[in-house]
Amino acid sequence: MMKTQTLIRAAGALVLCTLIGCSTVTSVNPIGRPLASDLSAELTGTWMGAEGNQLQIHCDSAGRLTYAVTEWKEDQGAFAIETGDGILTSIGDRVFFNYVENQDADRPTHGFLLLRAMDGQLAVWLPDVDEFQKLVEENVLIGDLEEDSQASNVVLTGSSEEIATALENLDLAGLFDWSEPAVVLVRVAR
Image 1 (cartoon, rainbow, N blue to C red):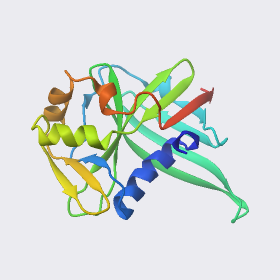
Image 2: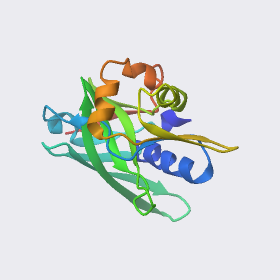
Image 3: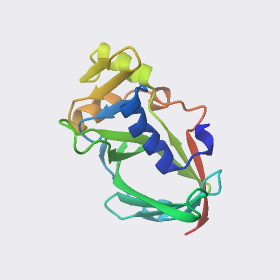
Image 4: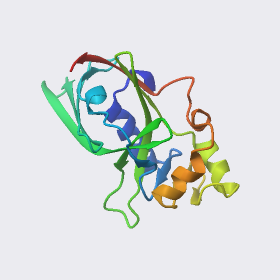
């Protein structure tokens, strides 16, 4: 099901999961360090999701990423445009998209996705809740485990640098479902 969704739907799904009781991983601070290289040429452009929705991405040299998704809404008989933004960071050679998930909450948190642009495709992976929970339980990462009958939520509470330092020597692919990206987008224009 997630394979047919666009980037905004993956981010939206994480927000919705937080509200209705799915398990999530979030962070009080963006995870990772500022980008060492400019990814604007790799990411800026028009991307297409499996459902045919277009995603416009603009990324500046500082790693600020803004996106807009155009989607036909049958019930409204019109196109709808959804927008969002965030910041790109890195840990080693891995790139993360961090976005504010619940800005109005007592403790705003950042959702994060692992990204990889290669050969005209942009793959997106969601964090594995169980793996991040283990890292908090083993004190590899500083965080809170918020469990109830419906969900296990992991909220990383360390600084961006503390999280990056803890994760840089781990197999990050093991912390995300590397075998199956949540979203794969295809570039259709620069």
